[in-house]
Image (tube, rainbow, N blue to C red; front, side, top):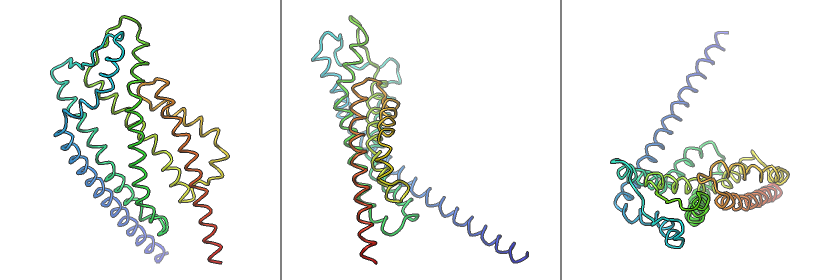
Length: 264
């Protein structure tokens, strides 16, 4: 009994040390990510005017193409703090997007010790693919922004003058970019789960109907504008990426089988 209790105390001490090391590592990764976000915020602040013109281009172009919408592309500040709030929100959102490669790398470095050596070699591929897919999702969100605004304005009724508050417009644009970017990261998660044997490609194939329903449901929930154009612009590429992730899963399974046969 004395030996068991002593072993239990030693095991608990080792577990506490391991937990402390994990928490220290997590804090280290978070600090690095926050520093990257801070540097990104500074870069965005220095380029605020250009970025604001870039963000308002879809709205201004729409107003120029549709004079019946009674808008001139001007954003309004309805309070003395609206201008400052818009500048800070653009810097925060922009800094977060610019720091995404660093954030993804820090996440991977934190998770990597729990993976096998063969799984760790996919680190660069996961980070690069995540950044590229997020950028693709953000581009599609920006590309469909004028079409989403056109749908929303047309449903507001005739002879309704459009007056947009700058902070609400900025929130809508970046919410669209984040929603599309995060949605496009969905296949990266699926490939990772197949890589660590949590999911199999055959399971994903057998559940494709439920997957499509879930994709459309998630797209409807996370799309800030709520218009059908944005819904289909997000859900249809996600369905294609779902099929692509299944194909990558079959490729991973085939390579594993080939390695096992070669080993025997």
